[in-house]
Image (cartoon, rainbow, N blue to C red; front, side, top):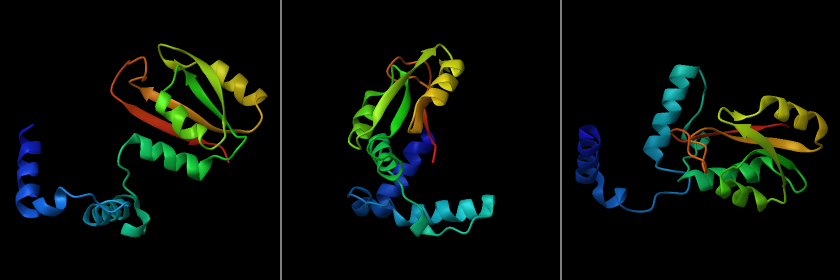
Length: 148
């Protein structure tokens, strides 16, 4: 908590006017440059800030993922139950959802395998590896695995 308070103080003192404004759609340029530099240094990539997009929450990420990966008629396999906002975001792209039964550990792998074998046009498997919104089993995280 102390570090967050200190960083907030520094940001507000040094760039308060711009820090409290809406940022560019693609995200704060100095942060995008820093992320690109870090990735290049640690992973041997050759990105610059124009290759980095910072989203403003999970809804924007879900929507952008849908725009990039999903087409009308595609199938998205998802946990049952799953995060309602993901359904809302992906539904805009004309996809069909097929529920994969879950237990306390998440998707039942045998059911997922069966559905992957028998379901046509599967483009993505949407899973929530922890927290399990809406059931609530641990800290939030999400993974979208796509099949092209």
